[in-house]
Every structure is written in C-alpha cells, then in structure tokens.
Image (cartoon, rainbow, N blue to C red; front, side, top):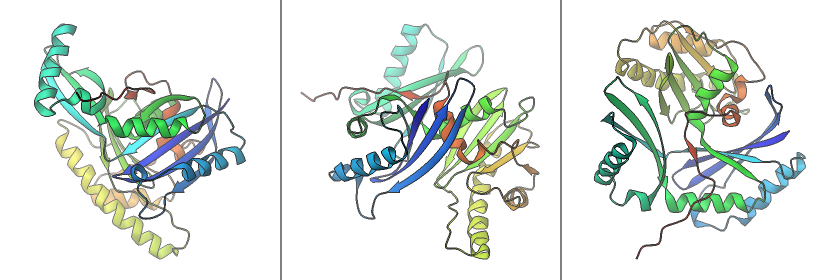
Length: 312
C-alpha cells in the first residue's frame, strides 16, 4: 500500500516540508523516495495565501504516483511544548480534576487556547507522571485546513521526535537487554533518547547536520565537527540529569551521513565509546520518519479534526 509521511518542520512562522513516499506491507515499510520543499526566505506560513504551496505539494505527489495515498502528518515544531506533572495516584475522576487545576494554574484558559494530548507512566507505587503536549489551537486548525486542501485522507497526526522511539523498537536497532542512549541527528534537529526497560525520556536539540553538496570534504567535516560538539554538550546534560544511568551503551545515527568518523567525534567529546546502531540501510536514513507509520500505543497522537472555541 502506498502511504505518504508529510513531515512539517516549523520554526516559529517559517515552515518547510519533507515528503516521504512509502510502500507498506504488513511486515515492513520501505521508503521509496523523499522530497524536500522549503518556503522562500521571508515567506511566513501562517501569514500568506498558501495555495501555491498546495499546488507544489500536489504536483510533487502526483509526479511520484501517489495520488489519493493516505497522509500521516508528522509535526516537528519549536512551538509545540510539553509539560510534565507528577501527582499522587488517584481515581480517574480525581486525576482529571487535579490535572485541570494544575494546568489552569500554569496556562489560564488552556482548554480554549491549546490542543493537547497526554501520556502517563508510573514513577513508583504512589506517584504518577503525566506529560502533556500542547500546541496553539488556532494554528493547529490552520494546519489541518491546509492539509485538507490536499484532498488526501489524513490518517493521524504525530510528533516527529516521539515517533523515533517507535522506530527503534519496531526495527530492533539496539541491544534492548541493556540500558542505552540513542542519538539521532537529522537535517534540522537531534533527538536524544534514554532507554531503561522502556523509553524513559526524550530530549530535543535544535542542531542538525545538513550534507550540503556544494561543500568540499574538509569544510563539511568542520561543519559536522562543530554540530557534534554542540550535540555532545546536550548529551552530557542528559546523562547528568538521568539518575543512576550507566553510559556504556551510546548509539549514534546521522540520517544523511553514514561516515564512521561521526561516532569517533562524539566519542571524543563525551569520553565514552559511541556505536553505530545495527545496520539496516533501508531504515537508518529515514529513522525519524518511519516511526510515524508504526502503531503507537503510548505516544502523542493528535486529533485529525478539532473545533476552535469561540470567545463569548
């Protein structure tokens, strides 16, 4: 079955798209081709008529023979944020009330202002940790209206960084018998995952590596070195903040670069051995996208339809 992952990269009002064309079977999904579309500098997605962008996306999709293929929208946005709240274990009704009180304290009228989803886990027998992902409700409605104009079925809306953990699990890219840190560097951002029995935490860095064709090998190496040095600082902070964690197992995947020296660079900056994940070349270059197609049992899945509340 043909499917499309539309990865929407948003930095404030600036937007670009990765269109990932996928052939899926019951056993696996294979990326056939990817296309990247960036809006011109100075063009703000939420302030312009986007009909020409719709036309461009439709043309690229049709040229690749994916007319009417269902779309999974994967959001990679710096305007989407997550609040973590810890509360005692309560009944479902008491928990709902406690969350409403805490969220109203943090964000007045949050139910009118944001679209939000939550996931929870147990800290211990007495305490529950709830993570709530929030995105501006009006902006989200605009995005859904934009996707609707493409006239493709929208199957679900997921968060790009958090679907990565699903990719790791479904493709068995690491040794899951031991705790590990997985660092995945894409063109625009980096996701650091801490795994201990299950995915314990995600950390997002706005540093990526773009393999620019016009750079000679030395200039590209310097660009990559500087990026990995910044990412190493983030990894160190994650390791520092993660209690009682053995840092012997650190994996690194650079999606558009399989050069061994990336692991060596990160290893030098961290002072720990860094490994490449288990080799699966049909998966690794597209790791941050493919998790969007998985059946996510405990991830952030946003609604495909919403109503915008009208102020009285």
